[in-house]
Length: 594
Ligand code: SAT
Ligand code: MN
Image (cartoon, rainbow, N blue to C red; front, side):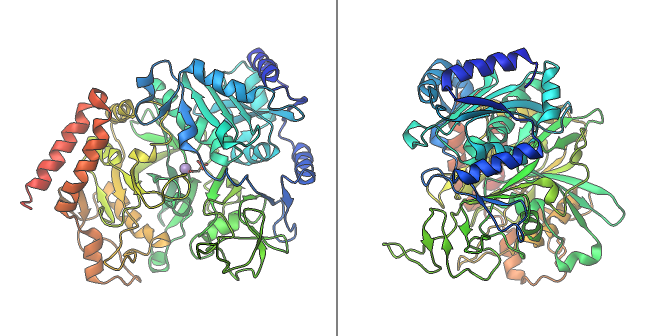
């Protein structure tokens, strides 16, 4: 255990509430891991996979009603409702503790309460934050062991009396009507009950590293963002680092692990992965922005991952990985839709049922063997492209920030903002068609500023203000871009091949940072000049390229309606600069005379 009195007192209190049979303080050792795995196997919580083909790998299924984050059950509990903002569900702290307390009450009877000390970020770095998660789920302990730095070194930090985030979690009875994910920023506390799904249950991830961290970041003058971090190295050894925000399941993991396309091989680029989901960034004494990845693992979407789309991810999940809700094959290996072939002729699906390819449900729809939001949890260190700088307490300097979303028609392949303030506006108007990581209607457009709508732990109007302020704190702020890999033609076919070919766009972006690539000024920002993107070895005809880069003022004027409606929710709290940018964009669009 720890000698930190606050930790001990809090555990005593939570023990009184949840009434576990016993408490186990996790030391993070290999023996402890082995013991937990064996227990989980004997209780049917994990299946040991084929250890010859997938050493150290296990299989897990969540409850059928518990396969994604549940945003409608996720709350920010602040004294003032306005501090949570229209972007969050709100509950008062009193109500939150009372409502969740009733569900937590006695929820761990007959179970062990695991107390898990973890660090988000390298242990001991001034960037890092420490948490202690109490949970009754062995799956959560084993997953947090991959996703965070945990165990003895963190206990040693806590022993120094370090402050920590209080993370209480119980799967309780996994009843969706008795499920709540509550954040108490004023108390540095998270209470999550009734779910065993990653984003709801691995509290170091979205709950701490984004919702609470964004709140802390605003107060402490740094940034907690839903961004991948990657390095692009040139043959002369110089590495530019990029941070990019896309909504969940829009390809952050693929981009972070990108392998240069054949056509650009001769240029000798190398890609280094720092993180695929979260960036914590600070302004350093050199006036630029530096970032660390607070996580220690990937919690990635499995479907669609194969040796073509993401060979580095395929290599990453070959050992020490926990698979959740994919297809379990008879030889105790795994498969998912869009995975490497051959398609197994039978298996057990994510619901635990016998499954065969081509099976149809009563409505005649194809039954997926793997849930569309099925996942792998794998150590960062498994990734062949992992950067040696992940453990550096200082992080890496960011040259460019990229926003992006999934829009079939509106946004061009890439555009550059005019300056930081305009870039903040570009982030603020981000929108995307919904994916399976959220429970909701697939395909519907939702506004998702900086990909932070589900993760900003306070009023988003203040968040935009914080972004504006951060820009002023930097002498050399990163340039801000927007990309859209998902534009389609009149037949709904994607115009851009995506995946590794995206490096061509990243090259343009980095060249822009050094004033080396040509661009055309449009009402929305700078768009690549024809032929300024290197297309060696990629066949896209001139018409498609024109479509990819096209800015249609009418479409954008139409889009402004949705943007203004979104902004209006924030009332007077929305920074004036954001409206200034809105008006300026409207003016530029109207000036085109459409
Ligand atoms: O479901 S998680 O929140 O863990 C992952 C994601 O949506 O990005
Ligand atoms: Mn994410």
